Length: 391
Image (cartoon, rainbow, N blue to C red):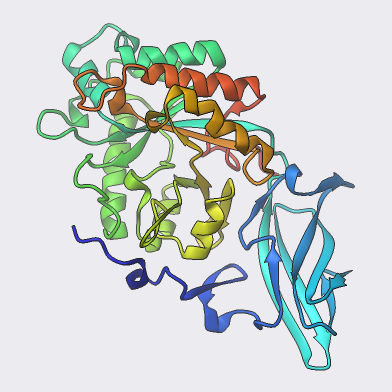
């Protein structure tokens, strides 16, 4: 499929940020006055301010005309040249921040909205993409237990050692030799007995074609999602099924976000990678939001209610000796330290796969052991706010 330039999608510099969503730049605040920090949609936690009096006190920074007086949510701002800073409290899950500048040229205003992760704590989630081989293996071998499959047994061992939790993102079919209706329901009780740490979610209809939903309609995406969900509910049960948090290739039309939210999707993870043509593996988010997510844990899209999360490590792409050096710097940046989004792909576990990694299990062990030693707790992203309680 021909790769389209991001400019064709309206995602390269033609969109701007306004309260409650994204609007053409013509609807933005006066270019003479704007809030630079926090970013619209920012998910803020204890590392971004000071907790006191039942609130998170944060600094709001921006620019305004030199002679103007600036008030931010009722708090007078401190001025330094064109720059202003005001310290305000966040008391609710979501807060509208309004900066008002008044001077000889009249009144100017800019607004953003942020999320307070009030009950945040250091946490990690582990998501595994492209799952189908283990389901085919179990269906063909008819094991006495799910965990007679070496792959699931590896994950169970990691759970036993570290309390790790896993979401396995699955395909409807591996191709011509297996599809989910062939998977038996005789393991349903065992799935449910392990639902506290092992869940299943939709990923795509199949591994190929690449980027299956990048230009697909919301209707096609939801059809494929429902087809996989129906099968998970049949053979594993409601306690095992979770709404997806990673769509294959992390590329969908933004017009599909509301439809996904309607199926319970609360979080979507991607790489938010800079490439020569713009940004990639980013759900086709605008440049500004993709750039922000490349440097921060999370960002909320208020129009759909979905929170986007940046993947911190891809274990199958990271040699063992590079795992800790990849994760450790993230703990020193308040924008990336609170949540670890850990990630890999199933196929690298299987010796018949062309790019098989004999040390794949050890890579997972190294990553999970290290985050556990640093005090991170395992969560599922679809629960609460990125795994933390809400309210």
